[in-house]
Length: 209
Image (cartoon, rainbow, N blue to C red; front, top):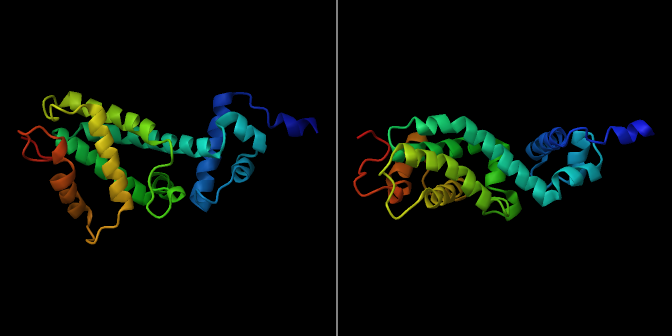
């Protein structure tokens, strides 16, 4: 009897949270965001339902933590490629295309960016936009600093980050009448999505000048 309770007492809060979040990611991948319950996550993690609430909060808070966790992991991997671009246009293009490509490959990432929670149109989980803009903003700000003078003078990194995130969600959730391969999608992003962010003298998108 004592052993049953002991297994549910976290010796380290961070370790316990990671265990629960790992379990939640597995459940989301297997059953989808909408169908996954706190009970499912608790069973997957091998803890009691109350332990999930104590460590990560309610179901909405759990989903949000997963979204931010998956996104931070992705951005940590992607940032070096973004900053290796020849200019700001190339950096934003790389960030956009890398996110879209990763979400289309990784069902859990796609579910979280284009959540079934928000119906057929999809979109980020409620409450996620502000922290996501901040997270993408760190990468965009680093690119803006690396390529001074290339961002429109009336914009800042936060505005560029919000635009980038909105375009990512749009590309993932809106069905296009034209089926584009990777090169076609790159041309679309270079032609229509990135130019509004650039200073007037940046005529060529994604190419060294």
